[in-house]
Image (cartoon, rainbow, N blue to C red; front, side, top):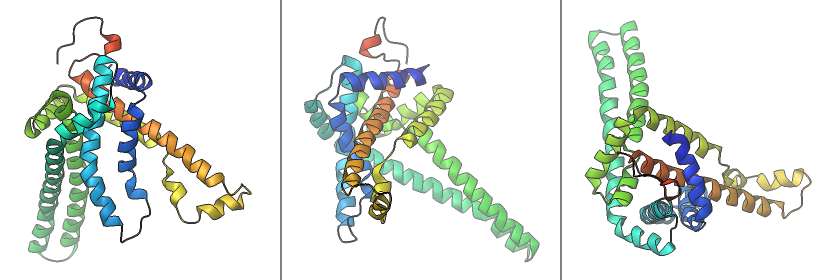
Length: 270
């Protein structure tokens, strides 16, 4: 199955191309930057830097991973080249994706108010309370379903832009088409991938107030916390980089492309 094979492909790509850890490390740091305590004055600047740098880092990482899977190698030069070449398309695609999600949520929320409006129009009392309850349930269910469907069908638009040199709208169509033709596999992969990402420890807990006192209360040396933070940080970079590599490898599997180390016959039909 493509799901299990992509996890194997991701490990092989990472082990044969260790420079992916450099590109992945940048992506991980940007992804987790929201957990940093930088103070209210510096927070807008940090958020802006993440918004500006993330598309570049994502484009470079995807290109390096594609090269590692296709040819068994990836270079930091290709990282920089791909980051610049795909920057504007990735920015536009992510902006379109976020706006699309907001539109879906707005429509769902508006439609969920219809039962409430009808209930109040019919008069006060138990009917109005029932309408309010139905509206809240529809809002919750509709919001969850809308977000899940959008993420499921459009999750590969970034990979399509970089790996197949597609434009923004075409990348969304490509992602939706691949998921629609492989719905069960894509749903299974998404669940397995989210579980894998959730299993990776992150250093956010070590940044919480009072953690230093907690370490001291256990009788551990004063230098334990920095060492622990470094170890957890390294595990986070390796674990999340592996997950991101698996994401790209699975996209390539969906397109019918086999990795270099398993290419004994021609590519499968997309």
